[in-house]
Image (tube, rainbow, N blue to C red; front, side, top):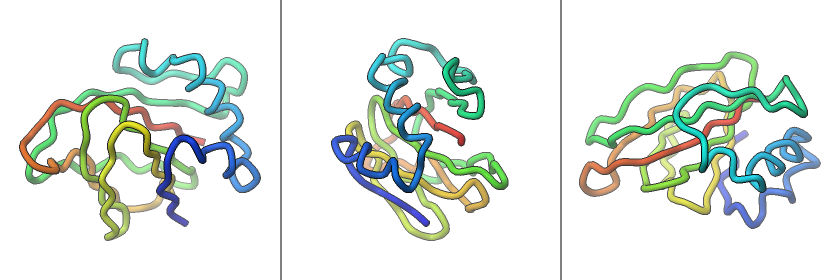
Length: 125
């Protein structure tokens, strides 16, 4: 299952993805905006981790690390990029999120127009 929507609608998916309650708490505290690149564990729920990275988009992008048996949610915090998940392409920009399977073949960091800097957070649950 792939979900692509706006952050305003994030809480409406909590029935399908219970971890969204924890993720909403992290986002409400602006932690991914304030923290630098790295891997973090959510103190309230150690089964939810998040990775913050900053990259330069390119015409070819890069293969994303797979997380077998997990679900991922990506949110672009600054800039924009195209993300391809199992052949479907999504334009990621601030205010949007994408949920996909950790088993999916994902390409990230594809430039929408010209290469640009972007900062993203990926929650793994």
